[in-house]
Image 1 (tube, rainbow, N blue to C red):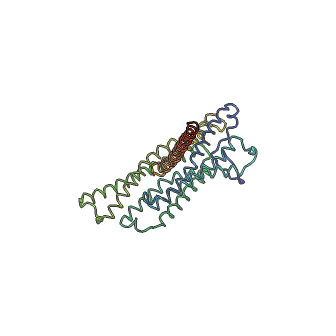
Image 2: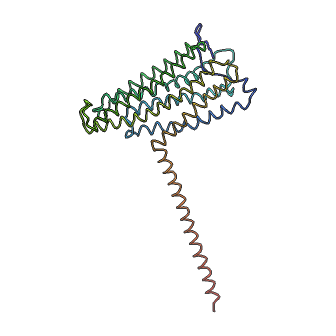
Length: 344
């Protein structure tokens, strides 16, 4: 959708209002219902995940945790603003058809500007791991909080700038295709970079462990521990980055195709747009709850809740058994009294 909030300035806002599609295909509302369901499932999980990450200093370095938390908050803003956008797209909230609506514009801008943080998430983590490799000797001892603040600040500037440039540039399908290709290229380069960092740390760790003398780094026990930590986290980031690249390629294809190849009133373009939003919401919900499960807090929560329920059930069973035994004793005493009263 092209909007003109200021005189002479036209902006591209990636939003579709499928009003005619709803009238022709009422079942199309199912896509929006499922998307809202996925978003509502993910929101409690992401708040729990942000809190859990703050206590996971044994699993990840504090700088990496802050970077992950910032990007999770950005994606959460994207998902939350999508709820309001859905209300406008489905006409639950009416919007003026003949003039610029600032609420719709801000909502969609917040949605896609925050979603652009997905482009900086993996590169930001890779940058933090590069600092960890550079300060390998004392990275665990010295906090160096400036690293996370610097990376987060640069990431925020980059993904907001990317969205602003997209709004200004995407006046035609060609420019939309260029933006999509740039996004895919960033994801691909992220995967290649983390693989290179991972292989470098593995090579240094192998040299130190086997004492081949190839590495120029002085061997210490703390250095070996730090390298093992880097290798563990980089392995996780490597698999996450490769999956992220595949996910991003599919997502960019769905979202870009909806605006490049179809008119704003084409039902097939509306379908691709709805599939992209469902795809993003489902992926985010699955990722959040999978991370909670892998970190272990979800398993501990379920285990403690299950133990609590079983404990209550056991107490209730024991109480009922005690009550039943007391009732039996009372009945026996009553019949014994009757027997003694009638016996001559």
